[in-house]
Amino acid sequence: MDRENRGEKSSLRSARARAYMHIHQRITSGQIAGGTVISELTLARELGISRTPIREALTQLAAEGLVEQSPNRRTVVAKLTRQDIIDLYELREALETYAVAKAASYPVRPLDLAKLTSLNNSIRSFQQDLIESGQSALDRAGMARFVAYDLGFHTLLIQLAANNRILKLVNDTRLLIRIFAMRREGHDTALLEKIYQEHAGILQAVVEQDSHRASRLVSEHIQSSLRERLELYDRWEIEASVRDHIPFFFDVMPSAHDSYSEPRSRSK
Picture 1 (cartoon, rainbow, N blue to C red):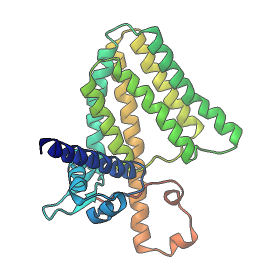
Picture 2: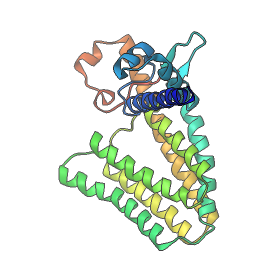
Picture 3: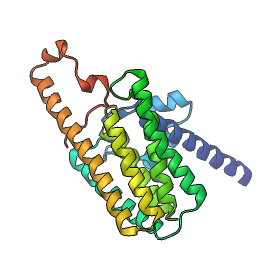
Picture 4: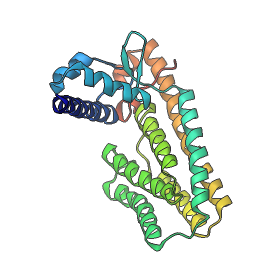
């Protein structure tokens, strides 16, 4: 009997893990947009499992901030308001400036320096890609590659501080911003150069073990990214308002929101 119970518990854990990964992937890939109601029954049918592991997976995702659950057990994919974006960036800034200042208090190993330099050089290489392609800005695939290198650069910097809890919190914060705020419009060559130079300045400060300068440069870098996000958010909110009141205008006028965006977030 004990063996049978252990087998049932193991099977339930496996089903819960599979449900969690399935829902998490669909949310993070944008297949399920913010504000979408999640049906336990539909997911159970898709995965061929009972609703119990689905419900447990959704509870875990709610704890991580990816979904919101109401008292009547209605589950909705989370959406960010303008203030949510500000709050997340402030949290990221507080954690990352501390981590980078701590990292700058130690000598950087040659291998880590080589990796960081390579990641930043890869960001600059997108400029040449844009020039050769004749495009004015990175397309969706190009932005996905940019985000990977940018995230890699910041993640490795934080790893130098040797604090895994800070690393997890920063990565979770960046994930929420990326999924629920909106995806950035494609970067042009000027913005790519700006980001490259800011990264280079931060890295130089860390190499020179100048904690104060490293912290200040990271703070400025994150605040610049926040301003960009808020400007985009505000522009799309205005556009959405116009769309609601003058829908025929958008029947004849394509918008930036249509060409490269995530579903917008309405204020709560």
